[in-house]
Length: 465
Image 1 (tube, rainbow, N blue to C red):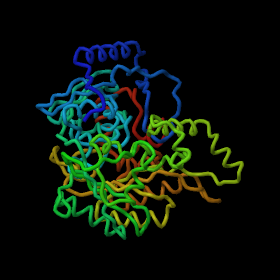
Image 2 (image 1 turned 180 degrees about the horizontal axis):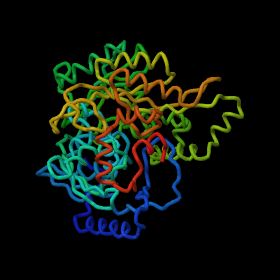
Image 3 (image 1 turned 180 degrees about the vertical axis):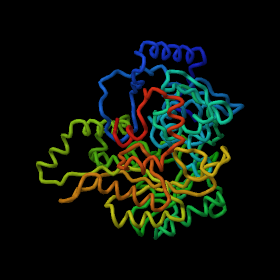
């Protein structure tokens, strides 16, 4: 199942990497900010340059070991899911949740949240973390779990975006997989119909007599949407390939079923960054034939977008041609499933962006609380749907950059939902803190970062520090 033979670091190499990190920390002046020098990022908001070099974490990018009997992987914090999946598939296993883009890191998915089509049964990536080693703002490396003396840090770490510390090592649970995935594309003629299908699958974990192991959905228009249902299977009558000329999201409209290898299924969205590659003209048949397959990856597109964010060459060219300036609307939000159709209908009538991605989620109650993760307080036992939309809209004359995002934030809050923080946010300080941890975040922050060597969550997310 794996692309390559398994390569794991082993504990000796990991301990050497941690010792190297500790040495870098000792060289920092007392009270100096703690930052990381990362090769990749899946954040979609600009950040203010600090002018200071970050800690070199290049030796913390691997899989330490995979225990196939216990179904546990020991993983370094900067390991990408692409490398993690290759190591686990070699044993017929996968992480409980594999976010859609290959260069998302395990540590990033846990501290910044992640979601995918197995989330209706497995929740979010941080829910399968047994324990983790965290480099805190005080310069210590502590081991946090749900039951030890650092349980408060374990619970507050998800959605903290590096403001409470950085994960150095994580022990995560794995699940068994088969070689292939059978896909069924179920057409809906209204958003209500689509949401009803997602709800039935959430409850029964089957559809028309066949079990369902993965579920997500795509809304193309108000009258055309699809639930995409995946089922593990040991055999496949044929296999499709969406890593070259063919485009996965278009296949949803073109066929009622499909078969992929498990690896190709996990990365089905990466080749075209869902559908965002069309903004770079890569979906045009002539252009696509000229682009080598190795460049059809989300991280390549991401580098292009970040280059444009820094330099604005394309925006300047568009402006000279008379085009209106644009506001970036790149967001993922969660709303209760019973409010999902209401949000999507509002969005389709208000924001000219399509398609829209829907992904059901049900978090577990391992922490024995109604809202077990204080920085992202969606309720255990309540069904939600993640709604993703990633594009830009024209800023009309008289409007202000950020108006559309502010309207989305207000609508999400009105529907008892929550918004992920990997992109632009416009909340005022009081509202933000009421939504994202409040007093509990402040307490844990003071305990593990007493000198403020890491940025505050509001300063980092809204202030773009």
